[in-house]
Length: 130
Image 1 (tube, rainbow, N blue to C red):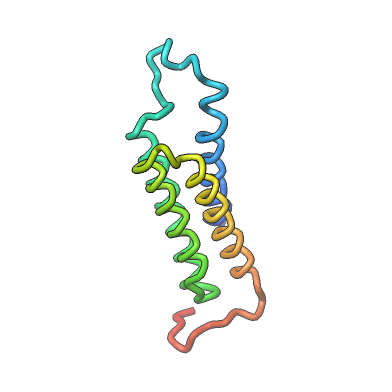
Image 2: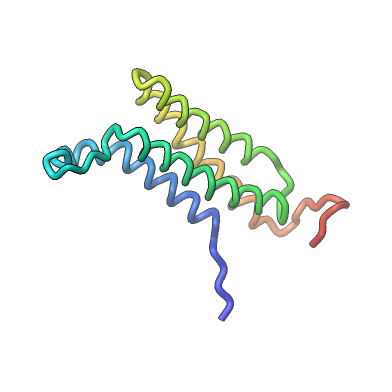
């Protein structure tokens, strides 16, 4: 059985999970500290989520770049989004605005990569190994 992971779908899912965590978790789970669970404003958890999105997204976009479209644009858009996520941790007063910019950029980078990988007329370079 040949099983392949769709890394773009996984990257988009991780980005959406991050957005849901950032937007809905504070509203829905304000009672977690009563049970000793502190996920809201937990710096380690926030950086872990950013790292997870970065690791999955980087692999996905690098794979698309190497094997299909040879365009750095999705990587640049994704990197900008990740840097904005890190910035929201550094400047918590600007968290909402930075988050509203970061998440759409990350999702757009994955969608652009996904669409570019599906184009039939691939723009391969002469040094392609496939």
